Length: 144
Ligand SMILES: [Zn+2]
Image 1 (tube, protein in one colour):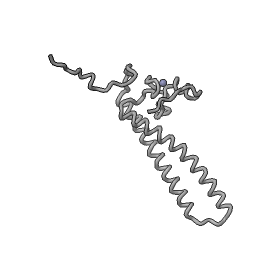
Image 2 (spheres, rainbow, N blue to C red):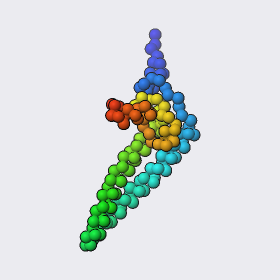
Image 3 (cartoon, helix red, strand yellow):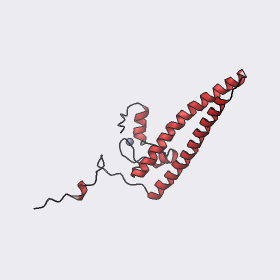
Image 4 (cartoon, rainbow, N blue to C red):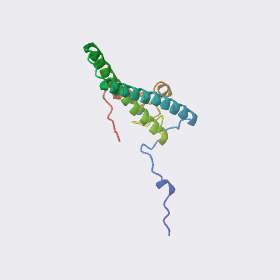
């Protein structure tokens, strides 16, 4: 007697069990394009901001008013790029999910994320229900 391993056991099964309905490939592609465009804009912006602040640093400014303005601009750039970096992270995660074929699923419960929500926020990680829980601090993140 020969033991034949069933094919299905060779394919790593996804946790959760219930397979969410897959999103239309063309639709995924359009979200992907939007994510990439947003990413490009963001990366360009962050790079420009960093270049600008480096440039300002290397200038020996003597005028105190100018220096104050510089400090303010720098602060603005720093806080802006922190937000941008976070957004960049979310966009990269969304692009990863597209690669994995998991785009459009809530990272928490695996339910499909409402399309209206993806239209507005293509990098959304959660469905509305989980997002609401998270905003109220009730969602226990199971980060990888
Ligand atoms: Zn969810």
